[in-house]
Amino acid sequence: MMNTLITVTFDGKFLKPENPLDLEINHQYQIQVISPKIEDEFDKLEQEFNWLIADLGVNQPLTRDKAYEG
Image 1 (cartoon, rainbow, N blue to C red):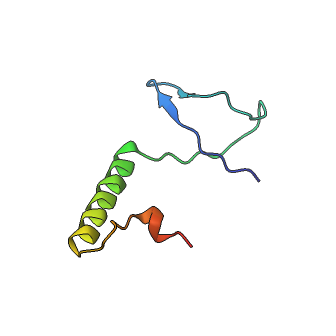
Image 2: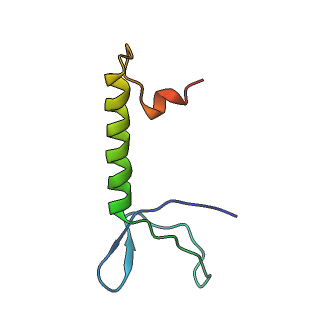
């Protein structure tokens, strides 16, 4: 099973992908729709998290990416 994240534009009738899709014609696919508004909220939360860590006096700001570095 393949999972692929694509970005599409909805023109009111059709979903139009930004790039060509490597999908078989006449097959059924399940699509999960993620609203840009939700992504914006995650970005705001990440910015608030970064400011909170900076306010705690961490020498180098801790970001989510740095937190997962091994």
